[in-house]
Length: 270
Image 1 (tube, rainbow, N blue to C red):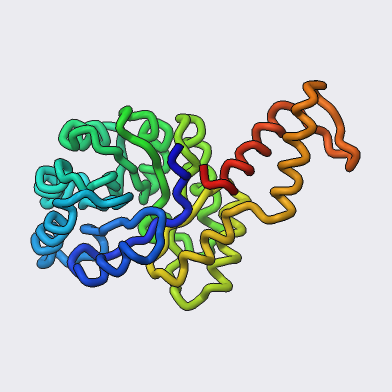
Image 2 (cartoon, rainbow, N blue to C red; image 1 turned 30 degrees about the vertical axis):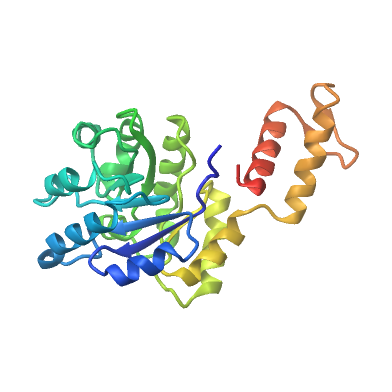
């Protein structure tokens, strides 16, 4: 089984030397960005440079193509979807299931990941999450959503975050990764934000600099204490006594055991 990605490193598609460095940075997934990180007059160059790089097989490289209603998306999909180095396509600013279906029909079966970045996208989260079998995940684009909602305080996004998490799980998709922390020097703030995101139900996080990767991985991997508790629960469940209480007083049943098994699997990255 492929380990669940915890780190998703975004890199501008029009800067090939930085892309090459990103591929060696140790991220679980590298996302070559053709959208927000690339100016309009650099779009064609970014697409060509990315196509050259991904003409050979790569490991866990996704491409964020341009938004479904942009003038560049059709060329992005026609050029990049067939390439052997593309592991997945990330679709920004998705607002409807129909947009996902339209992209899926042109993507040749590539795994798709939808980014919800507007109030309308959040409102339709479950419909988008169940739009097509090629869709493997949804996540939140917080910068655009913050602007769309007029939110200044970070806590103002928590309802939207939970909405995306619940929609993903209701659609039997993996828990979504958390959106980027934009200050690459604020590692303490990143760690605190990751802890909050983990409490909400995110699993893993997007990054925009390699120095963020170890902080994210540490935040989302189980602690020694969590591993000890999970091992105790799983061992107790092996006695097949049904619902029971541990000597610590903790009550365990099937749901608690399943959560413990997920914790152990995450620690093993399986």
